[in-house]
Structures are given as C-alpha cells and as structure tokens.
Image (cartoon, rainbow, N blue to C red):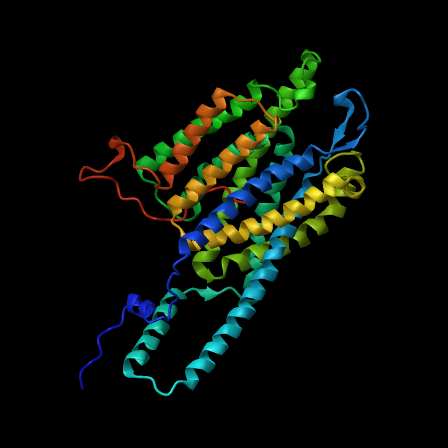
Amino acid sequence: MTEEAPVSEQQVASRGLFRPQRSNARLYIGFLVAGMLFTGTCNTLLNKVQDMQCVENCDDPDPRNRKNFEQPVYQTLNMFIGELMCLFVAYAASAFTAFRDLHEKAEQAKEAASDLTDLALEAARAEIEQARSERKPLTGRHILLLWLPTLCDICGTTLMNVGLIYTTASIYQMLRGAVVIFSAFFSILFLSHRLRSFQWFALCTVVTGVALVGLSSITGTPSKPASLGVGTDAEAEDVMLAAIGVIMVLAAQVFAAAQFVIEEKIMTRYAVEPILAVGLEGLFGCITVLAAMPILYLLFGLSHPNGFFDFPTGWHQIWDHQGVWVAGIAIALSIAFFNWFGLSVTRTVSSVSRATIDTCRTLFIWMVSLGLGWESFKWLQVVGFVLLVYGTFLYNGVVRPPKPFRRHGGEEIIDETEPILPRE
C-alpha cells in the first residue's frame, strides 16, 4: 500500500474545499473599494455638516452671534451606535454560515462514495484550519477585554469631535495621520517591536508633515469665512480656536494609538472575527457613554450651560433641528457601512492598497471641502500633506526606502504587515 502524498492548501483550494475566486472578483473588489472610499469620506464630511448646523439665534444678522451644534459627546455616542449595527451583521453572518455548513454536510452525506483522496483533502483542510486557529476564541468574560480599547476610543473620538468643530475637515483628516507616530512608540514600549532605520526616517517625515499641516490651519484663512473682517480681536480668536482644534486632534491620536496597541495585543492571544469585535466595541461604547452622561452633566454641564456637557440642551437641539438628527442618522449608517466595507477590503487586498485607499479618502475630503467653499487652498497644507503621505507610505512599506536606508545587498526587507492608518 503506497503512502498518500501530502496535500497542500493549494490542492485543497483547487478541489473546492476553499472557495475559489469568481470571474467577477475584480468587479466585487472595485465595489468594496468604492464603498469604503464613499462611506469613509462621508463620515468626516457629515460630522462637519452636523457641526455647521445653526441651533440658536439663527436669524441674527451678525454671524458671530449664531450658535452652531457643538455636542462632541453625542457625536461619540452616534459613532458607537453605528458600530453597534455591525454586531447584528456579525450574528446574522454567523447564523448564515452555520446554516450553510449544515446544508453542505447534508449534501455531502447524499453522495454515493468518497475516495481516499477526498478523505485526505478533508483531513488537510482540518489541519489547515487548526493551524489558523491556534489562538483561543474570545468568549465568556474575556470578551470584556474589548472594553479597554473602547475606553481609548471614547476619549480619542470625543477629542477629535471637539477638534473638528474648530478646524476644517481636510486638516482634521490629515492630522489623524499622526497616529503612526504614537503607534510606533507604543509598539516599541509594549509590544517589543523594533523599527528599522528607514522607519525612523519615515516617522521624522510624518512629524514634519503634521507640523506643516497644523501650521497651515493656524496661519491660514480662518475656517469660518463669515468671521472675516470683523476686527483683530475676532481674528485672534479664530487663530486661537484653530490652534485648539489642532491640539485636540493631535492629542486624540495618543488614545487612537493606544487603542491600536491594545487591540493588537488582544488579537494576538484571542481569535475573534473583526466585524464582531467592532460590534462589541460599539456595544461597550454605547453603555459607557450613556452611563457617563449623567455624571458629566452633574459635574460640568450644570455649571456651564450650552457647553459640551449640557446634554439636555443638546438633546433638544438634536430633535428640534431636522438637519442635526438627519445628519446623525446618516453618520451612524455611514460608519456601519464603512466598517463592513473596510473589513471586507482588508480580506481581499494588500496593505499597500489599503494605505493608498486611505490617502484617496483624505484627498476626496479635501476636494469636496474646497468645492463647497468650506476652506481655501493653501500651499503649506499641500506640502505638509505630501510629506505626511510619503512618511506614512514609507513606514508601512508601500514605497521603497531611500538608498541610504537600504542594506548593502539590496533593498531592506519590508514585511507585508497591517498598516497603521486612521480608523473610525
């Protein structure tokens, strides 16, 4: 009796045990990429639209006396509601998969016979699946570990929502690229990652790009066109608010980076479907924000009427102004679809493509903002954005390192790893 030759994963796939790509795979991937770009662009633009909705003194002839919607905590809750929708998708997908597998087993049982090769292929599939799932499943009380990155997400998202109030949509999106800086340092401290020489150079490039983008926001035309020409005091206030916006967005990247590192730490030990993780973080986020709202209102909201923590006033502003709640619904839906599109793209394209997609998203936000007249064109912002993109691409291995940073035998080896990019 001759020994059966070992069966490779490619052979398993060729026999249909792993689904082959369909002829329209390119069209499907194109649909996913387009959906990710569209919903990702809408996320930022819709948040800015909501910030621009007038909720008080809207008929006052002086634009500076009008009050726009400024409720960053409600916007954070809105984001988690969008992520919570992914939980229903995850459970629906799990139920569908279980039903499909049961149906396939029933069909296989009806077949007359199964030769040794089929048995070998089945055993190979089981071996491959076992190798892929060496991590323990994230179940039981271990699910609560996802509450840690959720807390970071709450802090980071709220700070970014405050920053978006005081700066433009494009600068807000560009400054989010600073997450690569903090993620790199946290990865060194807590994950024992080692950076190559070209990655240190990339981080310096990103720092320079972020500095130029932030400077363009402070020194350029104020983000509120209606406030121009009303005096030096008003202009100084606009500059100060723009600086606050930049600082808030940059500070938020510390929490975003911590979220990346904690999630990576969890994912290396436990196996969990990404869309399920997003849904669970959405659930934990909603619970935490709703529980914190009464406390924040008693501590800060009562003493600061119409402020960020005056939640009763914010609630009335939402329901009394159609533009605010319509934008809120659109934001929640766009976040839900963005996460689905993004996770689907992650499964089908390389990290190079994902980095390119995220850059295109920033460009689209910039172009739409310019087209709508929300901001003016600034060359300093262009230079900063180019440096920011180049540094991010270089760090993530999308572009070749400069010659001084290559090894003597050729180009420095770049791993195809998950890129560090902004996320919702």
